[in-house]
Image (tube, rainbow, N blue to C red; front, side, top):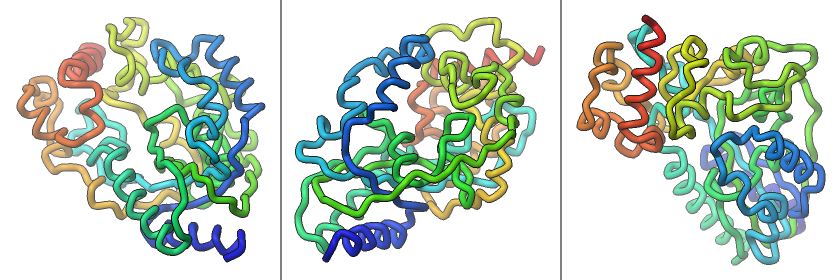
Length: 311
């Protein structure tokens, strides 16, 4: 196969396996992105996420993660759900965490995909990444044409919105490369206006992670600052506000991944049941879930914070 045929085979196989979109970039040092990351870290926007400062050289050069790397293949995987928690007064969970932990689901699917690629293309060297290593996945997705960086700093697609996970295969295959797409946010400021903690800069495209509700309810290990007591808007794990208000997400459609479907117990929990949740019930509802990251103690902290704010 020539480069175009190899690239087409890679994309066709990924789409057949249920991935939402695929794009390919040349594995190289990311000059512009390195400057932007350095500026972001210098401003302290990573908050207590000290790990963001580690392995800077690997974050901006995929060849330091995979020896001999020539290509970065970016993939997206839909997680949008039109299901909702039944009690509208209960503390809320971000849609991405409704079902089984996406790291596990997508990593397994990628291993199957790579096996099929090696059957068709012959053996090659590469590594799969699902939000699990110092990889600037949104920047690679942008370079690969999966979408543009929206004002909320997430990757946006005109056809698919932004409710999708990103993953990468960094490999030593030389391929035909895709190109970035143009920005279509225009004059819209819906995400900026809707963010209750003012985490998004007034002009957009820069996120102060230390103010983001997802950071406050997942990454922050200390007590949530009292100044956010009336701004968390009932989120106990993650936040979907900036995506829910984005006009492009009118094109988001229900995912087809069975493992992302929420348990009925989760959807049926009332506000009172969340407030009284025991560790046994937590373990039962969130077995294999991304919510386990915050642990029982962390989720209880969040629930108390949002329910106290209601009073």
